[in-house]
Length: 267
Figure (spheres, rainbow, N blue to C red):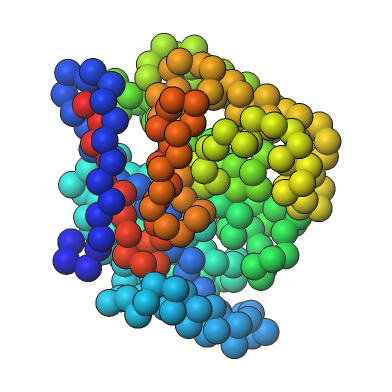
């Protein structure tokens, strides 16, 4: 693990035997070839931007991801919380698929997985590219769960900040299992997301509706009030951070393009 930078996180849930979870987020793999010729120059600029933000890392995001997946064998569960791709060219997804082939992980999508170029986002675009993106990963990018050592590990897509009714129903179904839940998302779970006004001001992706804003605030309040949701892990901000979510811990993990990985111990 010589090139990886661990961010150690602990949850104390009273387990009989501790478990370990590896979190990976925000690799932002940026590649293009002749199949997306118009993106080749952009992909080169994007890599330079991430190298500069990472302050000249020892390895590029692909190298970090390869090393992290090898390291994942030492953990009980691996969860990726989105933006492993910087944009959705065939070269990006061919590369990710090759690295992840045969590996076991949960994966919730971020906001970059579906965009042909960062900054170009819409619900229509996401719907039109979802099948292509999903075909390169195991599991379900939008919602999946796994019971690990008595803990319900849930990974859910909130990459555009909002929640859907289907996701709300599934979150309540996970709580009905009666086990402590750790929720992994791309966008950090934060108290300001309990208010629909916040979504009206900030979640202005084309296709977002007033109904989604109201529902998303309701879901966030549910996550605060339901006692079985014990903690939250996310990415998106590219830096490690801690949020007090109404007395519940909400951890933000820095980007894998910097070599950062989350070493989560649950006891």
